[in-house]
Image (cartoon, rainbow over all chains, first blue to last red; front, side, top):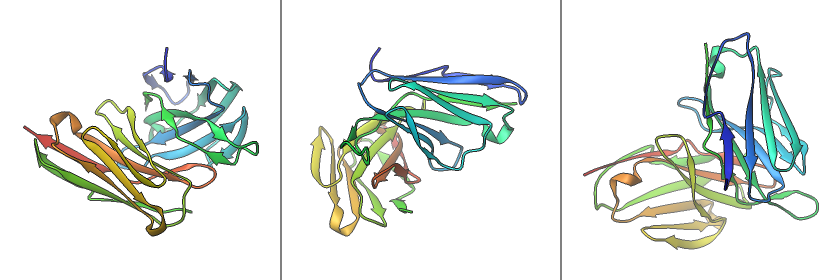
Length: 118
Length: 107
């Protein structure tokens, strides 16, 4: 595997289901991101993990729960979602520059998971 | 926060034509990337260009950081160039995406 991979590629779930999205990066990066792309809206940053620590939560509802067990893997746990949560969920990674972790460099994206909530 | 505007929102071209896509941003940035999103949703990295000029085949990009804009040039367009082109800019902590330019290239 190379680059950033995401599974599953497609997911259909009911509002009462619990599911998880998985992202794995094979680039040796130390920062990972979840983005949401809804129809007719710009990509929105959801979460940022820098050296496995969450550094950004962009006012995301608690029904989305991220987990970053190590710098190569990122999960997004989903529960009691709403139909308006249907979207393309994209994972990205980058190599953070500097010891403070405050400068972010080029981001590389996975193919995305297309989620439909019924 | 930083505002990112892309123009034009839509562009229709015949194969072989050239085009220029523009990205304006409202504040100084440390990171600027251009992406092509294919019909399957995959974001393809085109350029990482916080300043200066780069070229890759038929594509080139220029960022004038002091004037807060970037341009993406596509020459001799092909049908495979169709899709949405996004500009994304970052300060110190995240990428902010523009709303994209939807390009359709017809044979």
